[in-house]
Length: 452
Image (cartoon, rainbow, N blue to C red):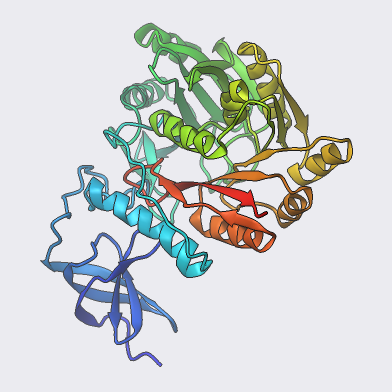
């Protein structure tokens, strides 16, 4: 039974990190989680909350700072929930992310597997090619920025260090236009008002930028705003309006109308072109995505005669990047618009050995196998919740020689690897990839091979 209570003060040394990037101190054997501290630091902490098994603390004073501690470069860091680990220098961030992966793979799943060093980014700032910016009317003016941690209060931001500079410029410019034009702003509590979110997307060299206005209703009040944007920012080639009238935290609705230009922008990834629409899933860090996909393709070690099934395939990115190195690509995706996008992207690149199927990966894959398809390699790139149990069962039943798993969540990765290992798959060393510098998120790539 712990003797730790709320409002008590302790001086302790930080011994570890949680997967969220908080430091861990221990009072006897009782862990207390403290944000914005580094392993090895001696700190003074005030206990804010004490549960049965663990507590949360607030940093009062750093008595002995770690050599890797830095002053967060972002002035909004302590209010905004977008970044969690800016007090760590970039070397320590990569160490933390390797540690997160190691704990999941070896402590939780007990797979006793090597975790490679985190593949980092050359300049770990200004990388996000997609910004989802909530809009609020407060004290007589429009605010745009990002949410405070665990709340729907907006921090009004003028410059974000992890979104691309063109996004910062457009965010400030659009905010001024919204104030000047007195555009009706959505009120979440009352479910009234028009503009809910502004989404900005850009391709790698910023030669094409898309803006999406997400509105509560179909009213189009953006004529003058669109004209001003396109005059000042000629790289804006697409402006769309997405209609979402639901009382929900989900950003996008089902209906999108073109207000200017095309309904897509085009980007290049490992030499392949992709059309990206407002609701397309597309990785937000171009430089690191290329490294991630190269790692996945190297792990697949393709000889040119393979049949690949690309599950959770989205708009076809990873499969199309592999299409020159394999005999056949079969993509499976549950979102119908993504399947259409994948087909369009295959055509755009002159890829003739890829075809796409709409449906749940577990159902479509088993159906294909019953029709005589024998996959040599299956690419798996699921959402944060990991693979559906039925999909894992289908994989074990289909028994491809090789599975390449790309994960955005170490905790669901370890769960799925543990299951597949028990089904007869050898797990290779895991490579963490830092797709989101300054945040606690880490991606990983791992190859699994059917044991002889």
